[in-house]
Length: 403
Image (cartoon, rainbow, N blue to C red; front, side, top):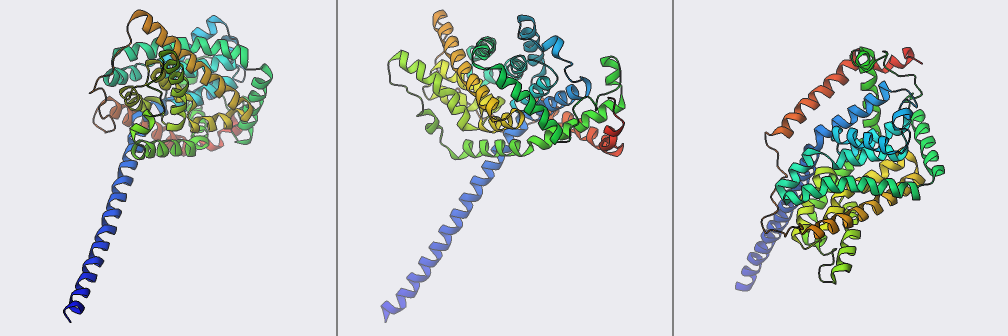
């Protein structure tokens, strides 16, 4: 009788413990989802203003520059054209997605493919904001490596593009790009150009700003799914994948030459798998550096924000699979070579730094700083432009556009 009375008590306790375990599991899952969402949003917030700026620049190019209008100044792959594209890219300071959109617009408007891609490299590597984050997390040697190496990366890419990218593939990509503009109802054959003979007149044209709003909406609608997926997946990997997993992909106990080569080749591959682009890859780069990756491997990883999987899919939408895969391959080889060259230069001068135990700090938080101010300003400006253009009939402007 006592056993009979005790068993129900044990059964009740077991049931309570089971319920408690389920509650704990649900709480743990909820906490994970919260951290996942926070990490994704923090990455998005860190690049929002540069993302909006890049899409605005892309829209302005489409609204202000006629078809083949850039062929005179950026239509070749000479020293002058490459230097100009590098300077313009460095001045634009875009995130990877926005830089890709702007480079596409340059290409469609008559710029040589290689020159347009040089703009994209400069826009994501030769920027002050990235240097500030690198200095804060990893020290000044990585700032020098990023900026000096960015120029080396451009030079190596120009050389490899001339050798490995056939003109036929590039022209097929241009035709695909133009056809995509037609099928997406962009009307990009010169029929939505801002009126005015000079840049100042175009800037003062209300019609021109309506066209900018139209092109901004078209570019954003084309890429919004890729953007959302990119940040969501990057946030999941940041929260759900241990840092040690990334670190184990690098060989750390091998002969120096083999370690240097392996790390440089693996660095960009980790970037592809991480889905993290622009400034968002700096914290992971710091983790890899602390975990024993070589200097050149980490530098190559930093360069590789332009070949993350969401961007490769965007290249496919822009240029078709043939050119997208070809350019990704050339990008990868350029990043590996630039990482190796930078490491050799720093080793030759004795400037390769040593990893510090307190190198990495948490940057995935939102505070009232210049990023927040710029985000609010650009977000208000873009939303205001789109609202104004919608009220004044931007959707029907193409019927009255200049041919």
